[in-house]
Length: 150
Image 1 (cartoon, helix red, strand yellow):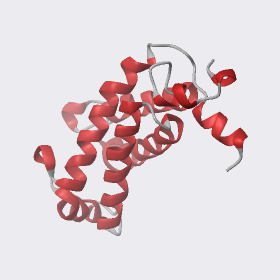
Image 2 (cartoon, helix red, strand yellow):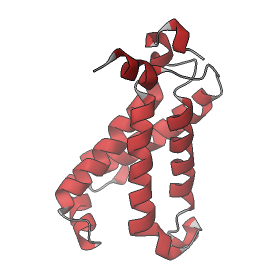
Image 3 (cartoon, one colour):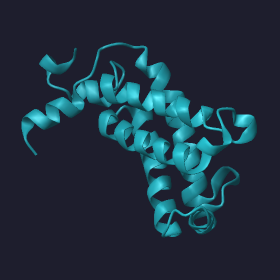
């Protein structure tokens, strides 16, 4: 991998405010991923989530559950520690687009009707982190060359 690419992945705006986005949203994504992967927190695990995904047309269901759960769990952990936040945010944004359009869009905006408002909020944070990077309180900021800590 070229040094320029690594520098662009780790470069981050120096603000502390991004920590307020990364930590709670990272916890949310990690918990949702753990539901899908391990059945924790009242989730259905890979088998149950895979069957549900297959039933809504996301096939093969087991693989889709593994991909979605892995993206959420490991992407959420990446947000929490602030490591490779830009690629993690890109994957999480994609996962939220899939969730919004395959599950929630037909139900309207509001969560009361299983709508897309929560997914939209998570998508917005993911896109924000994709553009901004992890911020000052992150592993990315520590690893970034000093010229890339904007």
